[in-house]
Image (cartoon, rainbow, N blue to C red):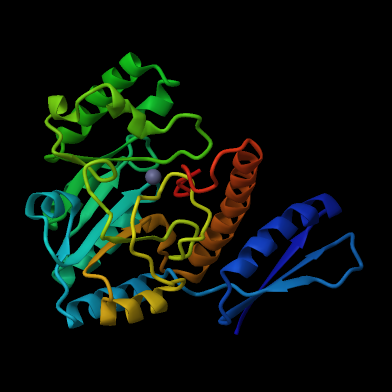
Length: 317
Ligand SMILES: [Zn+2]
């Protein structure tokens, strides 16, 4: 049992933490325990459990499960080109911490598994040396674009930015597929860039959301630190008819052992997959805080009369 204690300086902070703790309870397992106590309160501390899921070693067990069952794995470009009747579409959105992405990419290559890594243009994601290294390992590199948000919704400005950023990435490695970054706090859905423009004009073969038909694909993302489809999610959803009751990575391994659906799409954010205890706890607390914010956004959307399932990617605030 791992115990973590958080001591807050004021009742106000304790109040904010309460939201985080409520979020944590939704994703709990029983490996660890988190106690939080405000210095200024005489109340009993809140208690919850920190799941030790989403670690690099868990990811390696997931890879071993996939190879043990000889399930073919495809990156986005190959999935679109080959249109396989059976297999796993594996995609990674590198919102932050590119070093984590390199660690995951090396692990996959060791196990003979190759996927697609989408990099943003900002300095938290765009690391030329790491991008080239992941490409060298045999993975596909794609552009994780957010140019409509960056341009404040101005389509012409967004297209200029898109072309410039794509060229930056293509200076390093070949790029033929793209995937929109969610930016839940932005009013703009970056995929709207292609409502009036053709991605083919930029020699782009596919967009991971727009080009692929997910109707018969079970789509699972680690967004919100749970594979469950109820995890707060604003812009990382697809239209599908295939669902699975999966919450933890162990659940996912059991699912893969049986593969009840012939096609599975897995989306990870490598920043979430830590290797040290401190990194895991930091990432965990961040995810829970972000989840609390996203839940609020969903509630606001509901109050505004929009569907809660419309558009939300929690991947990176
Ligand atoms: Zn993203």
